Image (cartoon, rainbow, N blue to C red; front, side):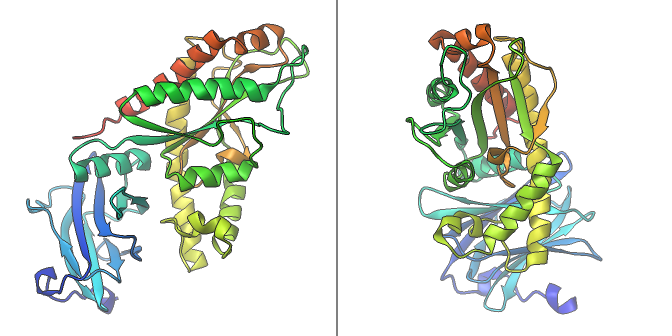
Length: 372
């Protein structure tokens, strides 16, 4: 334990073959620690007790630059220490109380990357967005993955007069993409922009490859009773979270190229026990963010269409099983209901639904504003 926390003289004495810069923000009893790195070097994040610390090891980094304004030590983080460790850099955050960190790695357009360590922040999504915005001095566009359900050989639900869910989902998704494109805060990304079939789990991998901050899947429902009508919002159930964790852990040990984004994730570790803990912590934070988004969405949808029920539904839908991307599935109405089906096929109503979804996404970020 003593060896693990031993620090050599600080970074100015080191040669700078690889540079890292860090910033620290403390708000609401939590902290966001952001390290900007050259490329995407290896990193290890863990905690120590007595006294409580968060330790960040950067084996391939030889120089680290602190902010121009010294840390005051008046919040959760008492002080930040840096030093050489086995040819790399170790950063230690001394905490007032023991907290569990959540980490996220984000690629930047200039070839750099950011390691974002959120400590006791109830909303890891906004912690990441806020931290990156602060480090660049301007808001970063939030990437919204819009998933049009079904497609190609999978028509989805079919109405009594032979209309397909896959085309309704595509219409609403296209309209939502346009709304997000018009908003400078967001960057939309589509899982499909044509009538093609994409396996469900592949959609989750696509969202991770696109570095999405939110995942919104668009569908239309069906029921044995033609009287069932209205929109619903789903997030991942507890059972679905358990199966998602099991699948993620299995895939992260697979060397196939298909799972490169999984193995490259900040919640990947060569140690299965450590990885299990990291995934569990990530899924808890992701679920909190998903519930917040779903709550905003129900409120927005209620203004443009009837709701099937006024509560957030939970299910083990495959497209919701990302441990690190807040996700929701929206059933825009019932194809099995004649009135719903007729409205869902109207471009005007598809636009209304897209406006409501855009409003809910914007409200989520408005309640957690990005800092300049």
